[in-house]
Length: 171
Image (spheres, rainbow, N blue to C red):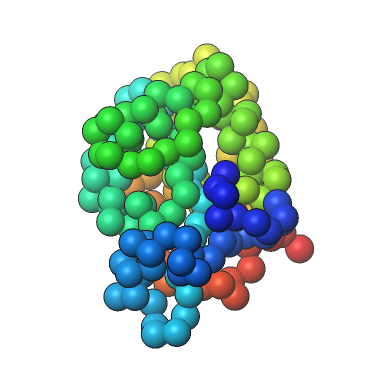
């Protein structure tokens, strides 16, 4: 995911502030107590076609928070987030072409800390089994998951997002 992440796949956080990315460190000084390093999370972003505009709007609103984390997204969603919001996003394949499965594998490897997945419950998807598998694996691995804007707002603004002691690996 990132050259800054040197821990094993089980590690759930990467530290910023050791001189690797000073701009992020300076931004974080206003958010975290003095002397405490900033926590870099790995956030996955996915949206079905009829929900992409909602995710883009949410990402624009939360851009200041999202830029301080490693982002990964399925193909089309990642492209839109980069082009329209200006976020640096690692892009996987498109969801129907295996992107949901790639994301599920990243969750199983411990490489995702938060999943924001705006899926469309009123529209059948050709890759519905992959969608269900992604949601199932997120639950199995205790990955905080938001499927709508309200939940995404709660998760992205939670103090637990920056809590290094918060357990995220399943027991």
